[in-house]
Length: 182
Image (cartoon, rainbow, N blue to C red):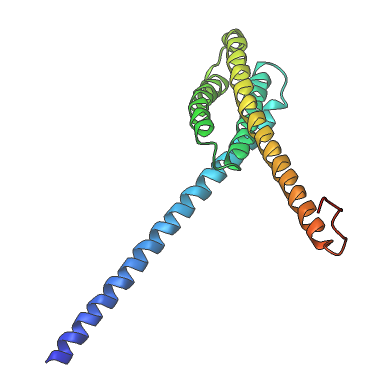
């Protein structure tokens, strides 16, 4: 009887482990599918933007503004992601990204839903000014992060050079020490 209870307990435990692994796998597949969907949507939107940016007129101008804004934000995101110590800069960038997403939605709505080209042409200078402000802010964050990384690399290289000089001098121990007062 004890063996039967032990076997039932082990079977139940194996079932729970198996069920847990299945749930974990399903969630992982769901996350990957969501990420792939977002990447596909972004690729499609970028292709549409590139095609519209080639058009002359206000639609092309709006598409170029959106494309330039996205490129700047992507570059800044990559630069900030490279340094884990930039938490405050990443928080500021997240706020800036919120403004950029709002502007991107406005530009997209005007490009696709505004039949009056004159109204789009009238709104575009103000939207382009906002995009320029966002790009300048993102550029400032990116340049500062790049300069910080460069400075850190230069300081690390200087410290390494000093350590190598010290070790090289220690390896030359066969040279007699300079004469000193005895």
